[in-house]
Image (tube, rainbow, N blue to C red; front, side, top):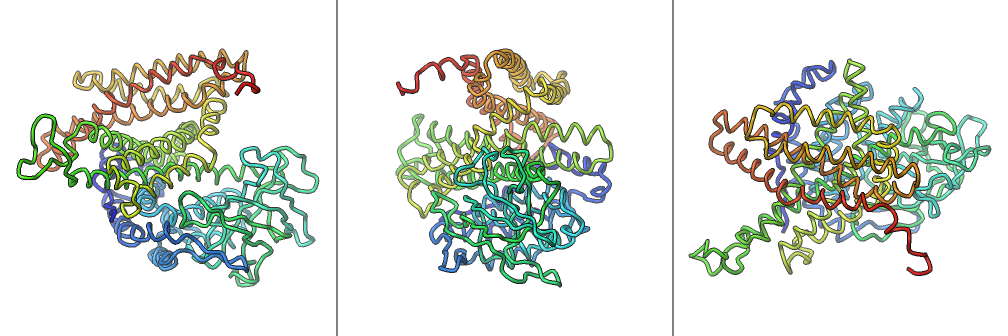
Amino acid sequence: MPKYTPPLRDMKFVLHEMLGVERELKAIPQHADIDADTIDSVLEAGGQFCSEVLQPLNAVGDREGCKLDANGNVTTPKGFKEAYRQFVEAGWPSLGADPAFGGQGLPHVVHSAFMEMMNSANQAWTMYSGLSHGAYNALHAFGTPEQKKTFLPKLVSGEWTGTMCLTESHAGTDLGILKSRAEPNPDGSYAITGTKIFISAGEHDLSKNILHLVLARLPAALAVTKGISLFVVPQFLPDAQGNAGKRNAVKCGSLEHKMGIHGNATAVLNFDGATGWMVGPPNKGLSAMFVMMNSARLGVGMQSLGLAEFAYQNSLAYAKERLQSRSLTGPKAANKPADPIIVHPDVRRMLMTQKAYVEAARAFSYWAGLAIDKEHKHPDEATRKINGEMVALLTPVIKGFITDNGYESCTLAMQVLGGHGYIAEHGLEQCVRDARINMIYEGTNTIQALDLLGRKVLADMGAKLMKFGKIVQDVIQASADRPSMMEFTGPLGALLGEVQKATMEVGQKAMKNPDEVGAAAVPYLRLIGHLVFSFAWCYAAGVAQARLAAGAKGDDEAFYKAKLTTARFYFAKLYPESAALLNQIRAGSAPLMELNVANF
């Protein structure tokens, strides 16, 4: 049976040794009293909940799925409701929320680390609370004072949950053609009518109420994206005391039968004149919804990081125990009939690939989490601005690059187990199915790539990218007097230069032919992903070298040496993909667009 052990040592390495979160948080008044011991205590308690309560339910949820009755009510898998009760009673939903609404007010970076562990343990279950966090963010940013008073304390406590309702059967990415409509009522509310599909956690039995954040059109709205408004539509209308009252006119019409995340109810929701209230200005709903969408995209990156960590742990344990053949350099376990498969070079390639991708993704994700804290809470305006720009620039990379690599990691983990890999009881074929979905929802990875290259890089003539390049250059320069770091800083600097040249080349081509952006976008996102991961591994290697030079002993010495070895593996075996990506980018759109449609 699969197991999950929270990777606390590596999490603490990133938080405290790489990012120095305690020092960084001192500059943010509301977090100035948070120290490393507090953070570690939260993560240790959270890890225990994840490993002991959530992980044992992961296979149960996959096996049982959710059940829909004739009245549109959904029952979640056995154990899910009790786990949610424990989650709420322990106060976990309020971890990073505003104390003004009952939250604990801990930093986003701590919440991110907790979310990694939850997703490792049980992604399908975690999505119920994860979407609530996105609804909280949207209402906190754009809700009226009355809406905040009514809805936020319930979301923060976990008594109510939330969803995001964008997609319709004919309108996925192209929200400009959605048809759901909102008719004004005399009391200032709106009657929402339409059907939304693919709504994760759209109906369930975990909470007392569900707040649906719904995109719809006002009667006079133009049939373009600018004519879309956002509404909060409760499953049950609040009564005079603010509790869940009578049922609203929204009903689950069906549940999707998916390849993975079976424990999460992916619903078709029918709104039949359901009562809702506008969130944010009329016809500006996408601006409000993007707060939730960006939160979800960051969350999906954390989902794949969590799955990849779980898959790595279990394939590593198997490789250490499974006996098969002898090492090519002679027996390594002479007292046994065969050697553990971890002695074989290609098994090590698969394990090291997982390890390198997971540890870089963790560093990148936590770095972004700390940047979000600075963006929203730092007292210095310039600091808020640069961190906001970095989060905006790199959100598509977190969603796209980490989910791509997470899927690869899960398939490699399954491959390590050989025939046992596709047997359900080992848990890795479920990881593969769950991870594959992450590359599609919350904007396919192609959409993320187009967003990165078109909106985040070329739209401002590469200004934000150059600012990230300055951050990279600062790390390289900080190691200029350390020859031992050249094996890491050299490739990082070379890749930064190539990225800058390739960006300029694509921009010049795109001025003549916009298809050049579409042709280059996907390899470009992976190229930027490798730049970020190279940056992360260079930084990690620098910290590890410094700790070893300072005389680290015992388990710490072994840990830092493993960091250096993994960094070297990344630059030797994974980084070279960047050369192929550059060739793909420079090949342009002609190889893709020349073939006549009739000849496909």
